[in-house]
Amino acid sequence: MVNRLQWRKKKKWLQWLNITLVVYLLCGIALYLLQDRFLFHPVAVERNSPYDFPVPNREINVTADETSNMNVVQFLTSDSLPKGVVLYFHGNRKNIGWYATYAPNFTANRYEVWMIDYPGFGKSTGHLTEQKLYDDAMQLYIMARSRFPADSIILYGKSLGTGIASWLAARRSCKQLILETPYYSMTSLVQHYIPIYPISTLLKYKLPVYKYLGLVNAPVTIFHGTEDKVIPYSNAHRLTAAMHPKDRFITIENAGHNNLNDYPQFHNALDSLLNNIHQ
Image (cartoon, rainbow, N blue to C red; front, side, top):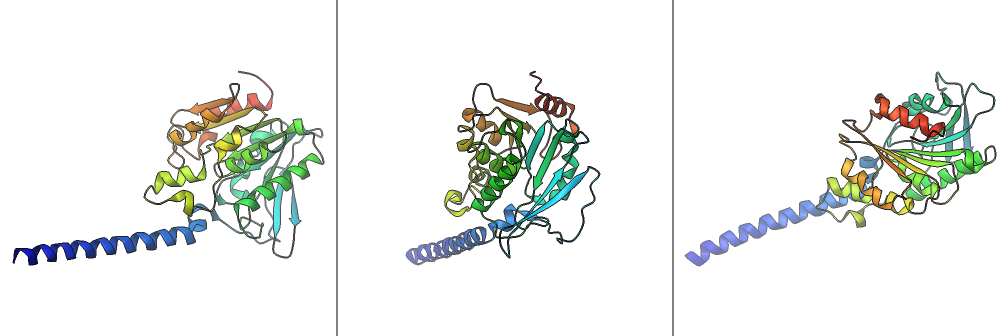
């Protein structure tokens, strides 16, 4: 009788274990197949739909083939002789229209700002992969070099875009690299939220910022808020180990992920960088 009861308990335990394993595997498969939906939240815009930005701008479409179009908006300065250009790689939400509000941070300091939309974002089309993000960034840099010398080009990454900007800075010369709310790597960030899966195996987008920073010869400045709920401050602060002695990690106390622009400390430091004022 005792043995029968023990067997029933063991059988029930094994059934629950099997159910747990099946759920774990199904969720892992869903995570792999749907990871683009989890990571990216684009909003598409019809190609013939005009943007209405308060900053003077011109729009450029670079078409690689029938299905791939790279949309770029160039925000212009009122000065006929700009200091240079900021190549701005934005975050994982919406499109250029969402980030255009930050253009005056640079145009007011006499820098043009060229913002690129990733495939599926805004008016850009094509198949989104990590390599495609890098290829489009390189194309944008080549376009910028046709007008500006390397020492007049600033690479700027925000959130998702920090991995792209860092990759480019590791491969091409620039005046400086500025990162707003970066991550150590996309792998480490996703692992933070989903620690029970082998993210390094499942994730298609690695974006190892820490690897690229060590290869960047230009000055690097990082901005991050202590109350960032999207990319934890601790994750970003790990990047200091890969930074050179003259690079700067600027902590914005109490700032979150999307509101650094509300803090005078951020603007003062950014203005200093854009005007070559050493604090």
